[in-house]
Length: 459
Image 1 (spheres, helix red, strand yellow):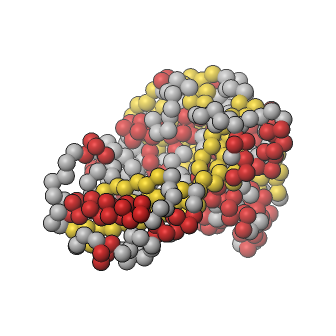
Image 2 (cartoon, one colour; image 1 turned 120 degrees about the vertical axis):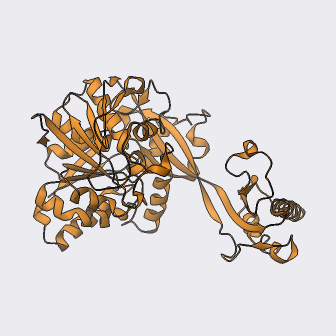
Image 3 (cartoon, rainbow, N blue to C red; image 1 turned 180 degrees about the horizontal axis):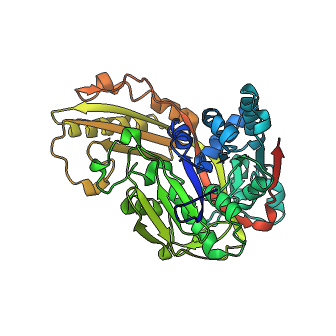
């Protein structure tokens, strides 16, 4: 923690990853580009948990975001020598294994004594599902109302979204690296602010401010110019984009900024675009810690590449936690071909008709067949209107179903169109489409009292 030019205490939380697969250079650039107190790394999405669970099934030592190991190694000098603390939900479905890998990195560099790892567990409900269902927790689908028992035999992963308190517990025990499983994205930023400023558990407005701060930087450079619609062509030096940093104040106000001499742009439009991302009901952004009212957020320019947010209101949370459940839902395969001018769209449509007729004659069983014409209407659908003789069109056709043999046969029916279908085709150098298992998403709610987290600090 440091002070601003007015002598007020501030806490700087830097975003270094917005998802598993984000820019590998970002963590190091964030700790080397200027003073930060915390580095927040967000790796998890709903589908990520099922991927990690399948990896853990193959190897009990896996099940975490392995990119985190390299990211941590790149910032290790800042952690060991400058006191930067790292918070990440990279633990996925196996936080202890992730922590063990981090200990090995610290040992390799001879700084084991300088690294205290806080491991948060308890969010993984997969081993307890049968017990919970038997105990009357239906874990009903939030949209359809169906009980989880209808797909129980196909469940891959089940993780409750936990809030900031377990992370704070680890920080209070002097952990300088905190690894969680399915923490909410926002808690990774809110926890250090709440810890440093000592916000009470019922200080709803400040807690809501911490949630909004976390929401603003949880997607990395998406609020500093990346994926930004407003005046996107004028955003400077995106190859050198700077990731966002929260400059938090004790009263709950905060400033979003980026390091000097980095590209991108932090502005009211870029920050606002991120605020409405996955927002849902603007009056009720529900988290385990607090419900934030996004309609109360005030946003203003506070200097070049600096945006201030303040006036945020919150209210008590619900008595439930959201549970992210993934289950097996059959198989799919997607293939593509490209048809060139003239009459590219007509050729692509003809190829679609021919392929569908052949699949029907074979009597293959699919739940759904979807065809998209990339370059014509794949993005905007009917709103795209009629095409004007495009120079090339990619036909992208996919099938899904419970019968794996039917899906596999589909993959063998696309290639023949190269020679026995419409002319001027290309784009099949990649070979046959790959059959993939479908992982479906099942959102549910569960009583908070059922989920008991555990915090262990490894010195």
